[in-house]
Image 1: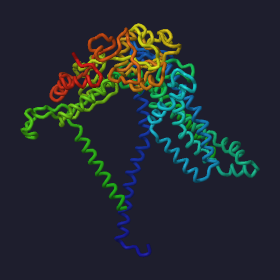
Image 2 (image 1 turned 90 degrees about the vertical axis):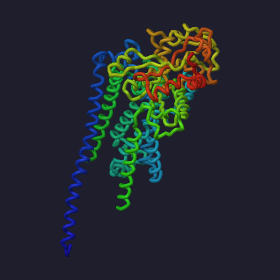
Image 3 (image 1 turned 180 degrees about the vertical axis):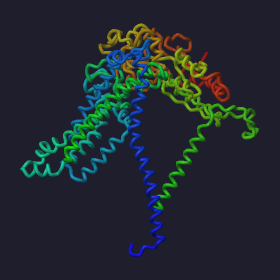
Image 4 (image 1 turned 120 degrees about the horizontal axis):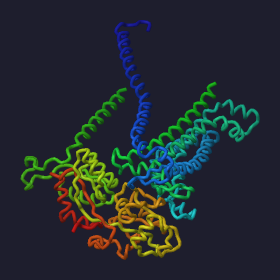
Length: 309
Length: 298
């Protein structure tokens, strides 16, 4: 900089302008990508509503939501979604009972009690778990879990809400672990140190201080795990037996919303009533998962704000 | 920096090649077979068949369709036939959407679907290509040998729910069915459940024929129905009204639960599509029908 030579400074200037232009282009692209997510989400909502319009007009929203008979290919078709909605809730309930205790406990272990090496290894294994395709979980469920559930509980058949729920629970564990672990990790070290300074043991610190401090993050993890479970398709299609009965216990076959859409979408006449009803099922599912994710986000945001102060 | 640039160039080149490759693949479906013989000189008396045929539909016909296409492609190396399953409804929907050349269907086309085709300018033409029987299967440990058509209907409508009511042990019946995208589901409903009746709500609708076989093999209270072509030694066939499902019984009409298998096309097929269909209806194609456990056309 002491002896600036003209050519070099000129080149530098040229470089900056091109760089600025490139930056502007890249910024525009990134800007667009950012908005893209919102645009796509909005488009999906509009598309679902548009396509389920005919179902709402001809079959009636209340009739569909409260009807208990699902016989879409009869003439006239019966489009009672209640068995499907309940089926999804039963399966998801079982999944939560599996993934919440295991997931949260694993997150506490990884975040609070494991050494650095163990932590790194565990985290990569959990990431790998999340990457296994759902059809693979389904296959394992068909081969192992269906016969096991039938024999262990002495049932007529192993294709039950329980079977599907267990596999979904296992599939949701990675989501619950990684987000709970983040929440625990975000708890300031001062809190732990303060607790230790007061003479608490590590267990006392973890259960009386760290977990309560991270509770809203853990709640969000559970909600996101729930969203993952309720939207899963392939495994439930293979494992729950898909009988559209009004379920009374988790030891019965159930039919979920996702399984119904997947099994029937291929057969329907495009633009027909059945087609439109399947979109209405999709809309119900979309509304439920959207509400769940929104709730989880609001809770997470509240926690972030709390620690920012 | 240099390495990165090289990588970028390499990647974009690969992308470009891929794009053009894809574009090259999406060729026409039924090119006329009467191209001048300049490319394929005098070895063949007629011009060699060339083109691609896309077929989609019935899972029941997946095995036989694959066998036809493979044998046909062996005889005509310039022809590409692709077969996909997914269910009869799926195949017909694809034909109406104009994405396939033939739809495999194990049920006859619905009036609603024909009307939908007309609205889209698609003139659906039906071709019978084989006969299929539906076998009713139970676990080999099940003592029930024979059911009447009436009993079978009652079982599938959920009016009989225990094996003891049809001469078996005291055990609840586990009802297995295909899901409603399957032509077998529709045909079984018409033939057994009754057109104005419904399957029992407790019937488990499984996504594939193999899933039904697997569950019947594993579950001694299960009952299911599958195409004759899928019968294996692991399951027991129940006689219906005294007749056991078999190829001869379906061919002579003595077995009640049998049906035609169809291929649907848009208009009368021409060129390579006509050649394929004629070949299927000819001796070679019908021999494969018998080999795959279905019944050749009389």
